[in-house]
Amino acid sequence: MARTNSAVAAGPEIVSGPAATSARPPAQRRRLRKRIELTVLLGPPLVLFVGFVIVPMIFAAWYSFYNWNGFGPLNDFVGVQNYQGVFSGPVFRESLLHNVIIAVLSVVIQLPISIALALLLNRRMRGRTVLRLVVFAPYVLSEATAAVMWLLLLQPGGFVDALLKGVGLGGLVHAWLASTSLVLYTLFAVITWKFIGFGIVLLLAGLQGIPPELREAAAIDGATPWEVTRRVVLPLLGPTIRIWIFLAVIGSLQLFDIVWIMTTGGPADSSQTMLTYLFFNGVQRTQFGYGATVSVVLFAVSFVFALAYQRFALRRDTAGAVTRAVG
Image 1 (cartoon, rainbow, N blue to C red):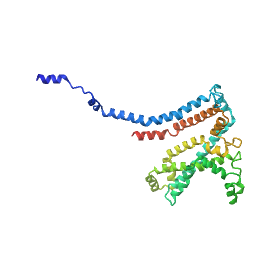
Image 2 (cartoon, helix red, strand yellow):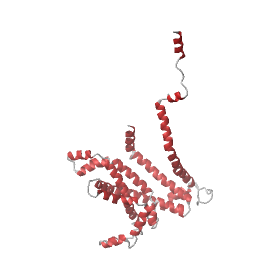
Image 3 (cartoon, rainbow, N blue to C red):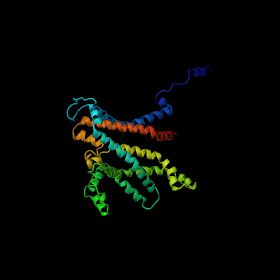
Image 4 (cartoon, one colour):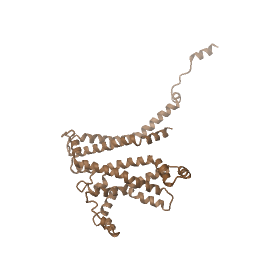
């Protein structure tokens, strides 16, 4: 009896060594494993993002306070003089206006066309796969290839002029890339041809996520096809449309390849964009400090738009996605 009492008084034995490791709670082991996985998976992309995005942004902001031609040390500190020159320069204001015009035209013209073609290509019909391929094919081409191709087609006496004359519309022939009042809209037509396929594929993906039972139920209730589209399909397609608008506006603010190859911002700066203005002043004129200033302003414009759009347009969509993922 005394032996039993002494054993009880001794209390539980203390486990050490491998046994202690195996006795670690399962929840703690899962948390440790998750941290290791996040470190391994997110570490390399984070290093690349910091090295190729954050660090260049910091250097660009630093260079924007200097008058630097790209050679030698940074000695000529000018403060905010470069920013004053950017905002007071009429060419930059026109360039910003051109980007805004293309962004507005993208939403007003490209979006309805993309929705209409997506609704058409979403129907079951003969040759639908071929039509989808034809619509998406221009997006596969590089911007340089598309720009050179359209530059040859739109040159005076080129294929477009010959085609218009051949169908009896010779009065519509213009200097497509040499008219200061027409060149921006000519470029927008080329941009629409190039990128509208991406929007259509994006909208088709959104249409595939709409249950067909909802359309059938609306049709049974007596709704016409137009009412089904307007009251059922388009509201459910809203998140995809908002994402498309965001991508279209950001892409419009970053136009460079097609514009530079086809017009180099001319004639008389009538097709200049912020990026072509940056390249002309920062690289060709070797004013790298001024070019860095334009890049900072372009980043600020894009960043402010992204934040505002996230706050007022995408907040409900992203909140719903997070809620569904957590649930």
